[in-house]
Each structure stands twice: as structure tokens, then as C-alpha cells.
Amino acid sequence: MARYLIRRLWSLGATLVTISVVTFVVMQVVPGDPALVILGHEADPGAVEALRAELGLDRPAVVRYLDWASGAVRGDLGTSLRFGRPVSRLILERLPVTVPLTLMAAAFALAVAVPAGVLAATRRNRVTDLLTVSLAQLGLAIPSFWLGILLILGVAVATGWFPPGGFPGWRDGAWPALRALVLPALALGVARAAVLTRMMRASLIEALEEDYVRTARAKGLAERIVTYKHALKNAAIPTVTVLGLQVAGLLAGSIVVERVFALPGVGRLIIYAIGTRDLPLVQGAVLFVAAVVVVTNFLVDLVYAWLDPKVRT
Image 1 (tube, rainbow, N blue to C red):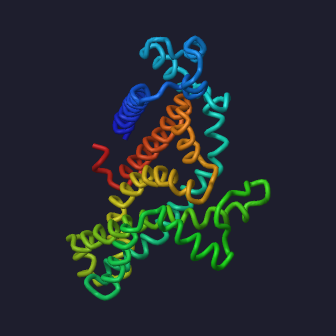
Image 2 (image 1 turned 90 degrees about the vertical axis):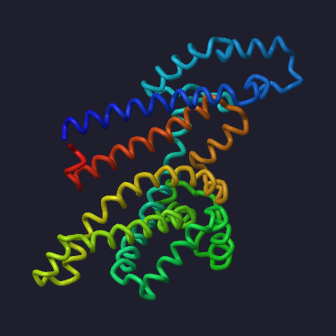
Image 3 (image 1 turned 120 degrees about the vertical axis):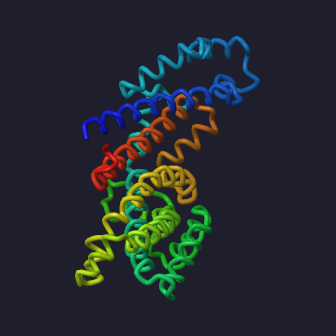
């Protein structure tokens, strides 16, 4: 296990370095001068050059990358050009929105996918199975932003049970904040629930056809025990892997969903930074999201190794 852990940590570090390089390079080739964006295109060229020197944009790209990367290792992602504040602080201030939203969406996806996938697999080719597969296909086909608009009009506006947008903050209590995140979490989690449902169904069908399951049945064990005690654990392995990969989809999808529901999360921060050509903020936010995805996948690999000892070898 120790050797496997070292290999995964090495891969984790290499991936983060690669992401940082790619992020920095992409930001350099994107059209638009941050100094011109701040001062305006009618600004005096001398003032533009002075601002570029003040921001360090006149230095070689390699030097700027090394300074930025060394700061990122220490938790310093630079200073926002628009806000004039540390990028890391701006991101942390918006995590109380994005993190609960992502966790609620993942919890909803799991709560739907596991029982739905098991139900479909144990009733293969029956009406329940066909209905579950059809609903999963529908969930994959509906874009999250469109589903968010439907939830606003059909639930928030029509019933008043949930707010149509905005975020009151956690200072007013947990319930108002959670109510504001319920509909965005549903809009974000439906597509992920559909993916996990199909994966759970396929994995469990395959597991139920294995020899050890036939042996358990031959011993006279009840079908419920065969399914939940023997087959489900092995069927959960690929589902756990897919769940880790879905974190990237949840974070990427939160950018659109936060926009639809006017949530002050990391997603809206990234959109604002891109629109204002705030390079340090874009680089820091993208690197942060990528690091969360990579670390989550690393943890998923550890869970995978725990579930399947053959992976450790």
C-alpha cells in the first residue's frame, strides 16, 4: 500500500505542475492586455507601459510563472487586478457557497443513483428497469442551466417554497442558506445522478453474473443477501471512480448554475475575472478548481485501492 501511495502522490504532484503550466500559458496567449482593460483603450501609452511595469507584465514569461508558482505553493495566488485583494482570500470568501452546493448536488446524485441503479439491475428488462433507464437518459439530455430555469419558474415562482435566486448567507441561519441552495443543487445534480444510475445498473448486472454470486445462490442464500452483501460491494468500485470524476463536472457546472441562480460562488467569480481580463484571479481560481479535482481523484484512487486490493499491486 505504501508503494501505491507514493506512486499516486508523485502523479498528483506532476499533474498539478502540468495544470499550472497550461493555465499560465493559456492566460498569456488569450487576446487582450490587462493594462488596457484597466485604463481603457484611449489611455496614454506611457501610462499603459507604467502600469504594465507596476503589474510585472513587462518581465519575461518564465520569470512571472516561477514567481506565481512559488507563491501558489505557499498559498499565495497573487493579487486581483480588479479587486486589489489577494486571490486566495477572494476564493475563500466564496467557498461557503460553492462547497455546500457541490456537496448537496453530489449527495442528491448518490441518494438517487444507488437505489435506482440497484432497482433497475435487480429487475432487468422489466418495466421498472426500462422506466429507470428512460429517466436517466432524460436527465442526461437536459442541460443544467435549462433545468435551473425550469425549477425557478415551476417551483420557486409557482410555489414560493424556495427562493428563485440569491444567497442570504450563513449569518441568518443554516435553513435560509440551505433553502437557497436546494434548487441549484437539484439542477446541478440531476445529470450526475443519471450518469451514476446507469453506471450502478451496469456494474451490478455484471456483478450478479459472476461465479461467486452463483455460488452464493447455490448455497441457498436469500437474493437480498446475495445482492447487497456480495454483489453490491464489487459493483460500487466503478461507481466510486465515476463519482470522483463527476466532481469536475459538478465544479464546472456550478459556474453556469451559479450564474442562473445569482449565487456569489467561485463560478461567478471566474466568469467575472474572465470578462474583466483579471489574469491573476483567473489563474488562481482555475488552479484552485483543478487542484480540488485532482485531490478528489487522488482520494477516490485510495478508496478504490481499499475496495479492490488488486489495484495496490
